[in-house]
Length: 161
Image (tube, rainbow, N blue to C red):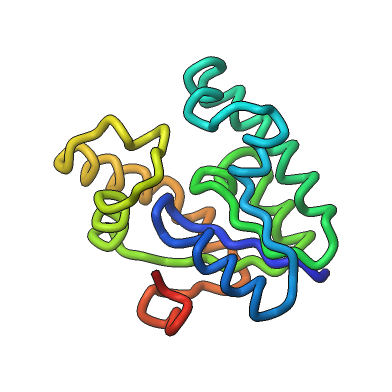
């Protein structure tokens, strides 16, 4: 097992930390969202809009399988990726998994100040975003906590945003 997969909520810093970690370990960095956009020649928000979340998750799962076959890679997955089907089991069977753990307030702050358009949150005001993060994190965290390493924000050191 020579790959590392970084999981966590949208806005947790998976791509930022993943790039730094890959560089430090001299590994390839794969952002699963960018991988999907390149593969399907379509932006993630458009894939969501055209096909819906369920169809997107199927495309995402196939992309995850492909990314896991890359040798010596640090892979940052989307916030919902580990929570569908047996994705977290697949990740743990094929890589070392790390959960970048932030609390609800930290996530909201990161999402509010993010330049990246996120299909599930870009249309929400701050109050709606707080409710979304609260509800969604409570559903997703049991999957994230299956990661082999749980790394709270305060323990990320110089890899933080």
